[in-house]
Image 1 (cartoon, rainbow, N blue to C red):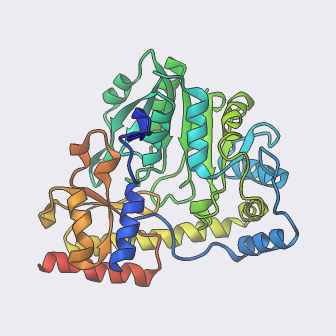
Image 2 (spheres, rainbow, N blue to C red; image 1 turned 90 degrees about the vertical axis):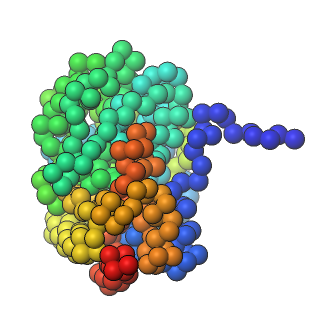
Image 3 (cartoon, rainbow, N blue to C red; image 1 turned 180 degrees about the vertical axis):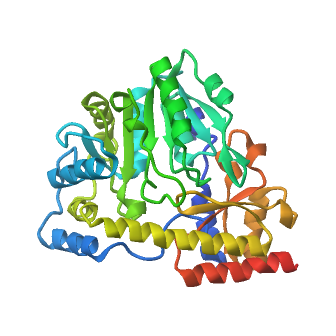
Length: 389
């Protein structure tokens, strides 16, 4: 009998914290502010386009790189919003969400023993994808600073070395909500150039920046030809279950990602692809209106968490706010989050599971604010019980 068939490099990775906490919410009936999915649907034009595509018979395998109209829409979006020019035939690839794009990029470009510089806390698939490639992660810790997060430039410089192959950058950043500044991005770009490293940028929250501005790393001098830029429809258009993502970059890098992607999912989401093309062509008012709505929700939840007694780290972007449990007597985020549904009927996610340096995140937890206002208000009302106890 095979007792442990799992390869050694994947044994540290159990059930994701998102699955655990969402199951806990279902089991207890708690308000789920853990997993980052909205509780409303995306723009009706997009939804109707998907229905129309299904009825029109667009239900078989799409082209491997993605349907032409979606690749053209992605290229137009990059040009119109960020001033980046990509050829839809060869420099744009449609993937099964950003998660597949990240995994395919790492698997395509990392040999065993290569090093990947990344910022922690990191989305959990990053560590798993690096392990699958047999590569080594070199984390640089984001630490609370002046109500947000920052990193030590010297620590970043020290993370680079002769085996550095990739830099994995998520901005706006999950789970901290940090939006990397122009100065920080210039430092990252300079180190990529100095060490001949490729940048893989996860920009799925590109349109959810509330303070500051989103600056794609690919737009910095010398970076377009060494950046794999990744985004998706899930967060911008509230369709996280569709799993439609994309990769943009120079043809050589995109071709490498496609070589791997074709043996992961091959293709995906045939009727959703034309619908996402429609969504990307919506007027600017959609994008600004959606951002403003999420900013209001951020402010609503931040105020409520502060009122409940948490130390709030106000995010500059994304769906999420992190909070320090120390003022409420907490010392371990995992223990705190596992007890929270019973204590007050709310689910959050402990961010320490996204760190190599567990101590740096032990007292921090993450709440999602991409929910209806009445859901946020109910969660806050329940969380106030903590400070009253």
